[in-house]
Length: 417
Image 1 (cartoon, helix red, strand yellow):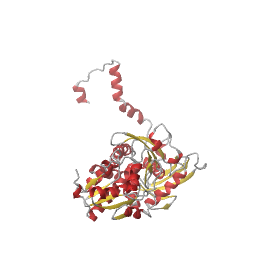
Image 2 (tube, helix red, strand yellow):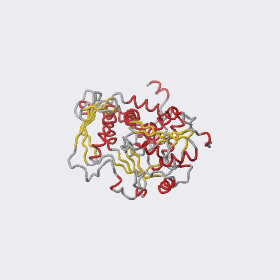
Image 3 (cartoon, helix red, strand yellow):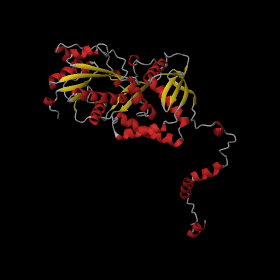
Image 4 (cartoon, helix red, strand yellow):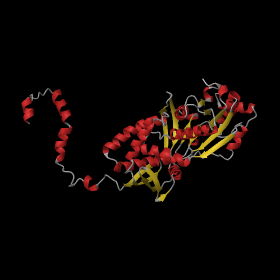
């Protein structure tokens, strides 16, 4: 239990939306502490010009804004891409991957500012509260953690608006819709409102990054992506920074209706929830990256990597980024990417990413080996013995099931052979 009198200064993860606008005065009233607001720009594409004014009006002592888009792309999104992790078959982990970076910088700012606590606006039913608090604990267990949604009696948007009005504070007009959204460089998520009925198709007003397949161009667009050691570096032969490349692919993918996902997922807290996600650039990159791996990774490494990626996805979704196992898995994924260099050609067409070519100087695919004709490394007659040995256990079981009794083998015959 937090002793409120021990909290003198708190760093709040701040978006300028309704919830965090309420949290600032609520912290001052209930903890009698100074509140520093922190906003990480990870590609929300939201208006930040008046964010400082809003924070100060609500009672914060100051606002700190940082542009973390390039760090987010290089050190977080590209790690995710190299892993190939997908949560529950569909979700490319857009919200999950941003939380460790935001939490890390929030802790570092709290330390620099001499704060006693960190605070967040996550609800008590979602996954984000776990992600933030596991990160806070792993990075600085001495900081107190304040989660207002688990303490106050505000239970609706109307309650929050009334709270601000009663104190003469401005009410943010941001996000007037009924949907709860989270946007960053990698994706945008949509929850709540009509989406809570999982038998109801998303309305047209849900989507923000992509057009519908019906509205997409009737002509396909071909692009070429270049990779170096698993990282995308070029688009159509032109080099871009990681964040810029992702942003350009978001625009291309959104134009062609790529990256929409409708998912009923299992939250960490135990309930199922329905989310609609748009990840246009990420979907293109995942498709291209996997295709390049198909020609540069050997069979056993590729198959084992897919197995490990499922665990990695679960850890990331559960907020276990700052753990020894995640670091160890990253080292494994990094080692698999040494030869994942080359180019992939894709057509973008009405929600589809269609592979039209792939090449790499490290390709393990050789046309002269794969041909049905004569090959210097493969003799068709070799297959007969291989198949007999590969199916030996099945043959023995079938013979036993059929009551076929094999003659006993004498020890001296085994030794003689």
